[in-house]
Image 1 (tube, one colour):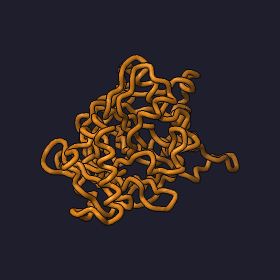
Image 2: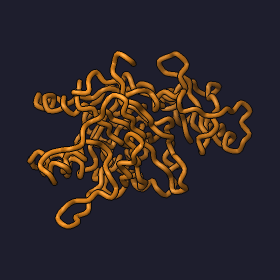
Image 3: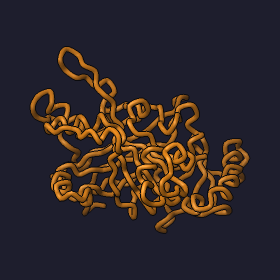
Image 4: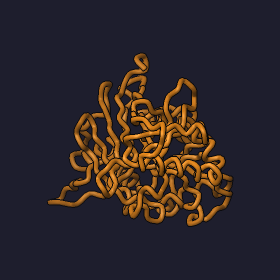
Length: 337
């Protein structure tokens, strides 16, 4: 199934069921008005929504209309929890190597994760609102899952059964604010503005053979200012799969329905060519590009995002069609938001 939330002037919007090809939609208000309701009562409501989804795809839904991503909020406009991991160790290795810092051995067995703000998510086409270009504005292309109820101490293989939905993410980072915050030892606050999500959230079965043991084996495409800069494979180099990330989160507490867990920046290792590292698959955040430039040339040459810059994040299925729709945002100053 595929779900979206349309803007209606309220905080939580109106739930839609969206066709597999993302062309048609149908309000689900006769079943549930908000996605959180569905997550809270999944076993009862999801079969009814499946019937509507099947009818929509078959052209039998009586009140279908053209789907417009511009009208979308985040599928979950606000959530009880947003915890973002760092499951691609190549990203961690590269960034730390650029600043001549070792990767602690524990990072390879115990996932990194931070608790983000979940009270004010952005829709897929909403602007990236930033107070200043001096903050070092960066996009981060990621994947996220949305869970049902997961009990404390749940094992990673069982945690996979609790995944209800997947989404794409732009986890915006203000790179120049991060060092001072991390130095305090308590993690990100001001350096992480509102996170944006894809137009639709999809059930794992929509991925078909690309969903393998908690990993999405498909490329994630990042296009910055109209130029494709990343086509990173999200599957093989994901050190910790989503079940392991969920198990990490619920080790000492319950994880409740509607919790969102992010993968961290999707990242692939480069290929050594003539003493230099080439990235045929590109990058999913500017920080990685700058880290590579530091390692190769001693200093970065790529600047962070400026007002007016755009970012597009999208994933296509094995059939070449968009799975989640695209995140398409423009960076704007706060006074114009």
